Length: 240
Length: 240
DNA sequence: CAAAAGGTGCCAAGATTTGGCACCGTTTTG
DNA sequence: CAAAACGGTGCCAAATCTTGGCACCTTTTG
Image 1 (cartoon, helix red, strand yellow):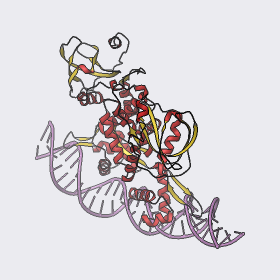
Image 2 (cartoon, protein in one colour):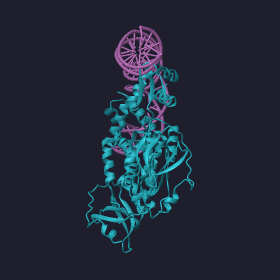
Image 3 (cartoon, chains in turn brown, yellow, blue, purple):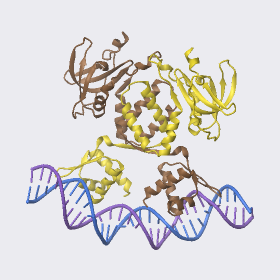
């Protein structure tokens, strides 16, 4: 029998019976006492928390809290989870937030260093403004769900984003920008993009963007996005 | 060289070089062409997405989006993540929520069936009331952070919860209840507990609970928590 | 067509895992 | 107290699994 299969069998048995002795496991799994002991050592190495009571009436027991999952997550999925937890934390004092952080920390630890760097870079794209205490909750996210797919692709794969934009005076233009950041100034969302044609940063209110589309392979350069008052449309927001 | 180490080396090389041939990998890793091919097969079994182009100028390539993490999460941590994403979804239209769900689905899939049942049971404990559009965001979570540790323990390990409670008339009593659910009716949080002494459900406003403490091993029975009007303190809330 | 690339089946040589054994330290029980 | 029932460790030969080499197949490109 394969090592991994045997490990699985041991874990399964411990899960089912709660507690067991090495001898019983040996019989159940069909491996020698010696091998079971080695396997339990290996499982502990891997991170399983296995308690053992020595002496007559003793046995081994899988810590019920330690049943762990080894999910294979794509990096964008981890990114999404990070944002979820960050947003939740920003939104209030929900319990379990600490636990969620712990879980995320573990996920991060299992990523390679360069991937973590990528993740942080992506998170850096999302600037969430301070929420005033009287902020309307439903106005947190005025981003149209239709926009999401194209945005996700453009941000995560660093593609040029093409969309139609209706400016403050109602004129419609077509734009192609490098998406650099998303700025959340509740209740408004902004896309901060570098316009290669105009050679400068531009802000686009999400609710004025339509039919976005991520263009083919571009891998544009990340830029330092300035958030000074002259670039950032705080004032427009303040004058509402 | 160990199998796992070699697998890691292959993945690392593919990550670095983007694309490579079997021959080059063979040299780099120090194993035969045959072994590399076997390893790549094993990696694919494990879930790695490895593209290969046959013919002159071909090679193998690790799908850059498929870099995956295999974190070992404790079940309570998964629970916490689930709540985070659920809360985020409830709070608004943040992007990436779908991706986060996908990630969570994968995590869930990697759990054993009985653990998923447990998770669902735990999630079922959290009843989040509808948020009115004019809800104050900062009033989402008026649950004192001091309460969290004891609550988490009590809920996740199903222990009796002992705490001091100040009722509407200001009288302080000591309670010991089986925590059955948390009811979120923004801006108020309630603990729904079964009081074994009084043999009935009781609601406790979180902000009137103090010095909670999870008692030793109990593993009480889950009960069907009724949320009819006569039990649920909606009225108290409405009359604020 | 020839060369370069991925992919498969087979087998003996080489490396790792396994089982058995002796033995140690604890704890419970008669 | 002594024996029994536990988990845990070191050692070694036997059993098992992995590896490398080889022949050969298919696809693609110049």
